[in-house]
Amino acid sequence: MAIVKLERIKEFMDISCAAEMLLEKNEKEISFSVNFKTKEDEIVFCDTYVVYHNVVLGPAKGGIRMSENVTLEETRRLAKIMTYKNALTELPFGGGKSGIRIENSNIDEFTRISIFKEYVHMIREELIAEHYIPAPDLGTDQFDMAVIYGELHKPECVTGKPVKIGGLPGRLEATGRSVATSTKIYVEEIMKEKLNNLKIAIQGFGNVGRWASYFLEKFGAKVVAISDINGGIYNDRGFNIEKLFQYAPTKNTTIADYPEADKITNKELLEMDVDILIPCATENVITKENAGRLKCKVIIEGANDPVTEEADEILKERGIPVLPDFLCNSGGVIASYIEWRNAKSGNQTEKEEVFDEIDRKIKKCFYKIKETKEKLNSTYREAATYIAVKFLIEAMHERRWL
Ligand code: NAD
Image (cartoon, rainbow, N blue to C red; front, side):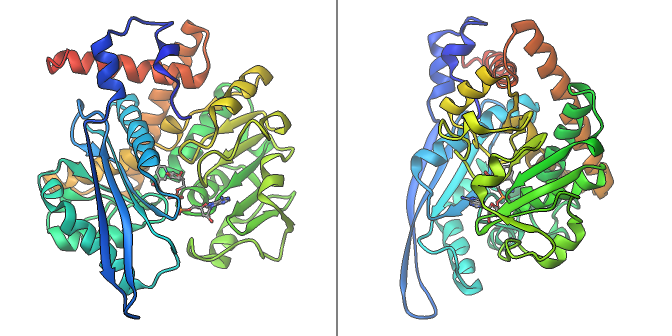
């Protein structure tokens, strides 16, 4: 559910009808079909969506998702999360998202390149004018962004590029970094614990999951369970993440058969007796069916929307806090902002500076959320939504939208 409904926020602040409309309606939706012929002479049609939610803070920013589950509804939901993420972290971007529905995501390089060339062809004006600035998301990566850059030749038009062609050192790791930093702050500030005393389970070993586990191990944590779409693995002593990286070097390789571990299912991982559960794979994995069975002490949302609305209520009643996605996974867009800023200014940034900037922003947002949560007597998600709504409404007043 990412953000809570405005109805709930209205219990804490006045929101005019006009402001509500501007926060609920999408500014723009573009639907088109990406069509091309493969090397095998097969014609492929991919339904594609680009959604701008609210762009009061700046150009629409958000990743391109490519999977067989993409829908317009999902793209709208994800664009809205981006509006709130950018507002919470005070970045000069609006909320945007793209979705490319592909029947079979097991595609060769030639097909992939064709898809992204055609994608650019269909929305070239939007991209060149920087009305929408894409980045990677589930199912897409830095090399896809490189193809987009190759079509546009303007480095500020796309972020998440490989480092050698104007990408940012640390962008690849950035989302996982913010997930790990959010976890560390929560453990130290709220649980008053040390990471190395706690057991962590992570669902997903793609971009977000692998780097979250990498940094958590570096911070001293014991990651005892990890999974991907093919299944999970468990090791009570904690995994050596570098070794897992070697075993499954890309997100297209699986960790499910890693030898130095017990095999578990994704269902078992979510319900495992660990201190911290970090879903980093896909949405709606914690539902009303399993929320009552979770044994973790806190959920750190690495993926977008991993907890359904009903599950969120159950977790609230059970006293299991949830640190929301639009804080925890904001490292990606924070790094994208640095990459975009550098593209505009010609500046360059070292990896450690990027991580420092992410950590600083996450820390600042975390304390703001904690303080607001105490003031409102709310959940973390409600407090974070409240902060973002307040910021957006103030910005809409400044732009004379209200
Ligand atoms: P990815 O494609 O790199 O990896 C996804 C991982 O999840 C893979 O290990 C895959 O096997 C696993 N997975 C997919 N479906 C699964 C399922 N049903 N059950 C268990 N495992 C499953 O994707 P990513 O970029 O790591 O993104 C993961 C989530 O984080 C998404 O919700 C995405 O929107 C969100 N996110 C990503 C970024 C980013 O910078 N990549 C930024 C913010 C949010």
